[in-house]
Structures are given as C-alpha cells and as structure tokens.
Length: 157
Image: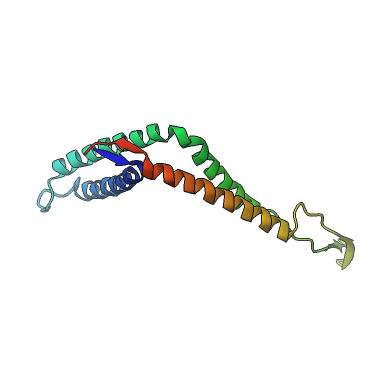
C-alpha cells in the first residue's frame, strides 16, 4: 500500500500499540492453572503478536529508507533540542558568595571573604540564545513535516 511518510508514522504508532496490547494478553494468559478458563487462544495471540512485529519492522524500515534524504535535519533537530535543554542548566547566578570560616579549636564560626561570581551568560543572553534555537528547531521541524506529508512510500497492508 502506498502512503505518505506521515501516514506511515501513524501506522507505525498504531502497530506499536497493537504489539504491546497483544504481548500483554500473551503475558496474562501464557501460564495458568489447568482448571482456569481463558477467553483467549494463546497460540493465536502469539501468532498475531509475531505478525504485528514483522509488519512493524517492515514499516519502520520503509520509513528509515525514505528519511535518508532528511537525516541531517532530523539529527539537527534532536541535537538542537538537547542543546537547548542543556543550556537551561547553565548558571546565570551572579550573587556574591561569602565564605564562612570555622575555628576547630574554639568552635566559632565567622564570616570570611566575599567572592564575586563570573558568569558565561547573563539571564537575558541565555534566553535570547534559547529563542534562536527554538526558532531554528521550528523551521527544521516544519521542513521535515512537509517532507513527510509529500513523500510517499510503500508499506505492507
């Protein structure tokens, strides 16, 4: 069956859900006491599970082959998202820090030296850089989405 990559991605997601549903049924019914009744034929469930896995492999493979032309964009989106998340961990705290000194002999604590902090980015600079990254991610995402909606691939029925 010929479908767009976007449709194939939806099919893939449905197959993942179906695979998980079938496996849960197999797990729940694979071992039981002989006198316990079940509404399922576990052998048939397993055959359906295996067929779903094989279909999922075929759909994923077709998607991967079609996406070769846009791998760079896909990987760039991933890395820019990671970079944006990591940038949020960078400290922009410029608050001076005062050390405390402890005298082990007397047990007294007194205020020590004050140290000013030096930061790589100010809050506003980090926010601006994050906005730039998010705009680039959105642009690339739009390009990938457009590609997914116009490119057709063959997947199993």
